[in-house]
Amino acid sequence: MKHLWVDPVKGSDSRSGGSRSQALRTLAAAWLRIPASRALTAGYHIHILRGTLPPSAIYHYWESRWGSREAPIIIEAVEGRGSVVLQAPVNVFDVRHLHLIGLIIRAPGDPFHCERCTNLLLRNGVCASGSWLDCGVQEAIKINQCRGVWIEGVVAGWANDNAFDCVSCQYGHILNSRFHHSEWGVYLKGGSAYFIVASNEIHTHGSSGFAAGQGTGFEFMDAPWLQYEAYDIKLYNNLIRNIEGAGFGVWGCYNCMYAYNTLVGVGNRSHLIDIKFGERTCDGNPRVCSANKALGGWGPRTVGPVTSIPNRNVFIINNVIYNPPGTQSQWQHLQVDDPRGSLTSDKNLVIRGNVVWNGGADKPLGVGEACTAANPTCNPTQLVAQNAFNTVRPDLSRTTFRPASATGKLATYTGLWRPIAAFPAWAAAVVLGPAVPTGRLANAVAADRAGEARTAQRDAPGAYVPPNSIVG
Image (cartoon, rainbow, N blue to C red; front, side, top):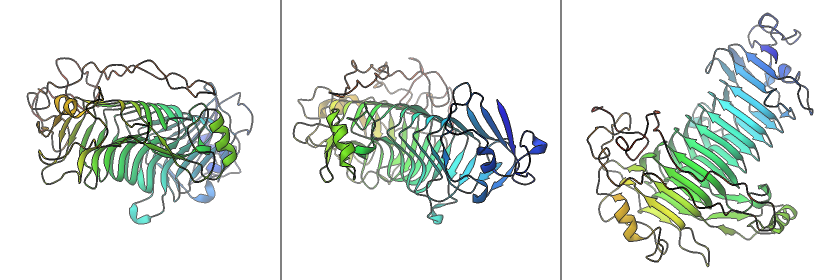
């Protein structure tokens, strides 16, 4: 491992950068010392001392640095989060095994953007503007066509569009992070696959808190993930609150499990949960759209038409959704899209074990022409029997959002689906192209948001198990 030091206050780019006493002044100078367009034989660890890096100190385009597991590229704030501020966007392309640790990026546009990267780690960082009043951030974190995206302990928000936007990314996790004050909270779409999204806080958003799938330009997708908008997404143990639109949703999802989440104050301008079709367009490159279509992908060959993307195997299990008195969703509990010809939004849709408190007893379920009596996994009789819609008021702590009592309504709720069944045999394949790699079929959630074991004796819907004594 080669070590480079950056001191934004006392450094000089005329120095070697090889020690703290010989620190460089700019991150740009350190970055340019990493060889480009060849596999690294040794890793690089850039240590940044306390200070602020203005735009002139940050290289404008981080491109083609090829680290590896044995030789990663690590850029780290020596004194931890809060000690180093970058005042220009970080724009990354074709970089492998990049680790950004403890950095605050406060910049307009997309504070962090990464495209065609492999094994990206963002840990304990901040990507945001100062507030919504800055009106400068479009997407706080924007990641496209990457393999291996690992987000840990990150804070991102104050965006006019998305706090976290991920298109056509496979393999990764989003853990212990906070996404806040944006129009959309977090979404994984465009063929994104194999993500665990757990123990995060997603709050104060407009259209949606979390979405797997949505709508994508066909040319921005990668084979073989060319059909569904999202594959194998597991969302659990998250706190999702203060969302004007749906707290979470699926939009063209295959094998997506949303379990043991706590949602508070959601849906006041629409409904609580989206079960919707994804949408696929061709956004200006018919050649690539046609090539993806020829591989068996779902989407139009030309600009103009819109292809609907169905859902298959969606489990929404053991969640708490609580709208306090005086608040409720505008229309209904759910939005399950009606069939579109032979396509459906509800194939093997399972909604079970959820405790929902939202308005009065007359609040419609919201299944429309979907989830009919002929659907064995989702129908009105099953929904009412296997969930608590306005029959169990969650006894949540007002400060921690945990069950407030060891013997209360949540702690004694008997409708949990436990153990959660695995998904059926993997059947997502591009017809004429390469097979889509199998995802994780098991759906067990062994612990809660605080790491407490979920056992037959101590479990509850929502992100937390019941306490051993009464709290707040």
